[in-house]
Image (cartoon, rainbow, N blue to C red; front, side):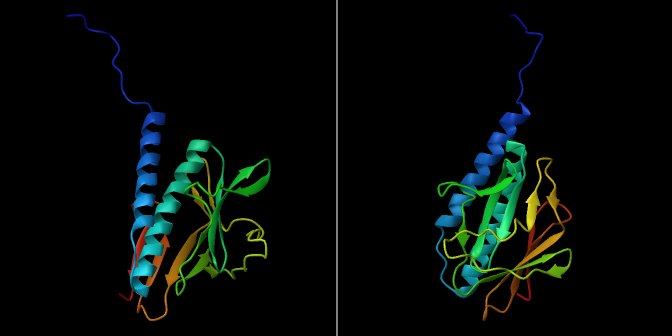
Length: 175
């Protein structure tokens, strides 16, 4: 029996590709699940946003360039920095623009201050001065943020923000 002096393991790139594939599959699974009540829509939107936040962070690390999150009253979109300008992702990409379900509202606090969200302009562009949240190539997320998904009549709010053990944690408040 001949024994090689070198063993083969997984590279970091191979592991990151697997993580991205898992995130994509999770995103598609969440997108395909129907919701029935306002509270269900609220939870579904929170899970969708949480999965996309994780995917955006991974995208920034894999592509070695910043990814941003632009939020409007109607929804949100992820953008990437190319040649000094922010550009949205293609309509087929998992980080494409997303309109929030009727009856669910997204509020944003950056460093403890509530951000006034702009309306989407008439062409559907969401160029509102750049993203409110950045995902950096090193894996950092900045600035300090908290996202709240609210739905009248649900009796609770969903908070998404940085956590102790994970980059993004979801918490239902008042449920």
